Length: 195
Image (cartoon, rainbow, N blue to C red; front, side, top):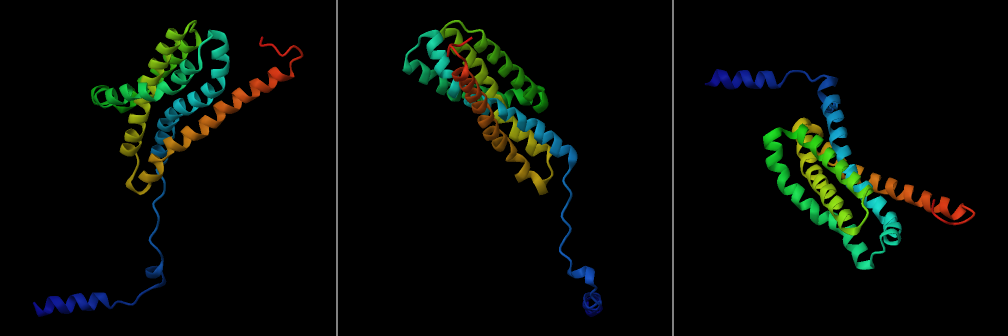
């Protein structure tokens, strides 16, 4: 017992080198995890872009479909309610077909909703498109952070799982910019009419 204690003190008193005082090395970012996180986070662009576009397109939708202010408000804000249905179904779906395929399904669902909204001829058809797009948004907001947390190493998990929120806000600004350009172009046209 006494010899064991003597061995421990002898190894603790070895001469220290300059390398002993260096800070611990930070792990490098896993490139595969970073690429997967960026791609999964791009799905958050759906909601941001939709909000940005709808904020400017609501004026034109109101004129074309001749709907009231209340109907415009419901049209713009209802996607958050509809996304609850997608978020509720996303857990079971991802367990059934996997996280990656659920992200693909979410993208396809949102695309189908965007097509329906683009071809809408009346308010009810437009709301059906918003419902389908809302399901896609709910899927993405539920699955993208989960998938990112699963593929990222512990040292960078916090940074990588915050990417969906950052991309959502960047895309919201981009969608709003496009609508503002369209408005400026219409104001410059000699007739001022839409083409």
